[in-house]
Image (cartoon, rainbow, N blue to C red; front, side, top):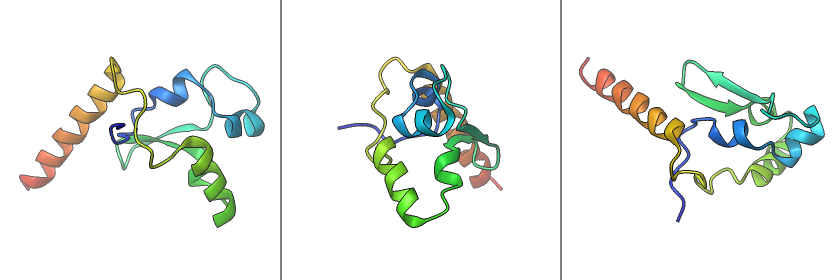
Length: 95
């Protein structure tokens, strides 16, 4: 079983999905990867800007969104993202 996605950006920085290649052309780091400061995580621009429910469905299928993180082992970016999220949760809880 895969671990839940924490938005560390590792996958998109390592490998570009087929939809990303079709939209942006081939790149080492997908240009669709964006940092969402308010959420403290990376998100896919193709998901954020999907114009129709059908387009969103296809992008989610291609990215396996909801399938969990398939790169959790030895992924220091994931570990750092988890730490940031824990600190943010503790900070919110202490207010």
